[in-house]
Image 1 (tube, rainbow, N blue to C red):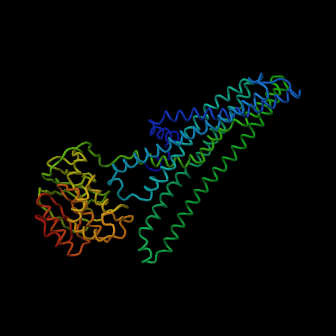
Image 2 (cartoon, one colour):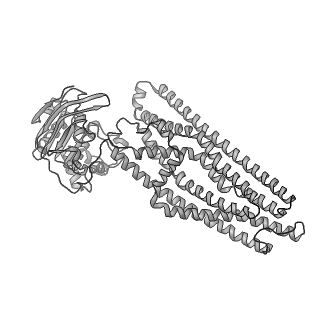
Image 3 (cartoon, rainbow, N blue to C red):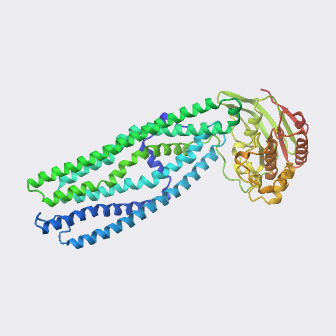
Length: 566
């Protein structure tokens, strides 16, 4: 992963280019949005010009001014009013179509990016995500992705529209006098380029800090909610509250920096527009006194310049939100660009792989500098129960995760049917293995849906049979809605033993040839333990079981035992 320092060195242009690359399929619609946007802005600016032309027409007929500059000299006052009405209607229609296209792109893009992010997370799991703050991940998946709508709906089009509209305006001003066009060009560059770049540099650090602190705040709140009972039990409420307040204050300070930066930019933009308008008035007045332009030119160019800053102001104002948006975009891109530690082998989804044996051959593995397994070997014969025991921290759970290829060994190799696990397609491996961890994760769904997670399109009969094997069926049927009973978030309301049996039901439903069980009876009473062990013993007639447990009563069903040492 890139360091924070490296992240800050990536330019805003590079981030925007990379983000545009994510939506190549939507570029035709984006081009359409830009065309409608350009036409809409030209209609809006033309209204100002036509109104000025109409006023000059009246003044000319009153003999207050002489000459009618511009291309609309032959048109009468009533005709100019009709033209203004047409352009006003067109402006509304074109603006609506532009916004419709931009938001269509934005919402389609958000769905596309969410798909890409979840696909990236699946590839990164669990090796790269182990120990990572969940709050920051939640912030990326929610707030950061939502903020990208600002970029796709309100950034790309304004930039392109501004460039095209400014070219049209420069040509318009050139027909009156080249110096007016040069003044307009200088004004557009200051408002649309210099000010955003100036404020963007100042706001980048604050934007990155704000997004990071927002993620940290999410982690703190999530941690506090999950550990609320312990916080109350150990009387740490005031201490936790103080920490949340401190984090919130730090977040508010960064938000204030961003707000102050945005206020400064808006004030500076307004000042530049006023100065540019006044400069144009002085310039054209001087030209008029030297006989190079008419009075009409003085009025039209001054009014037109004042009303022409819409696209450039829109571009300038982007930097107020763009700082946060680019910071969010950077965090999303970091996740998408992160390389998985375990490269999954594709294919094998339609191939049934029967289990003929598995082996660990002098494997070594460590978490950072802390060694867990060193030159460890193990043989797993088919249709037997292999019991593994040993002191806490000796690597029992880690071994199961290596057998699942959640991580790759750093030395030696693990084989499945005498094939290196790193060459076995991931889909085939998942069909062969069933894995039950110490802590069964339950989703906010019905009990039946939580069990069915193990097998796509599982029938109600299959789900019920799996629950019976896990000694869970009677409990489920005692509930008012049976298998349709919804579970709360994280399975709250179920005991540890019930959660564990639900995890076992998943393993039975998946029906893999190799079942890896990590402390499957740790939360069960003696009665339920006996029932589960009886079922596991029966499963071993056609399947292979690797059983990790501290309980002597659980390990009695093992055909072979392996003692692991710390």
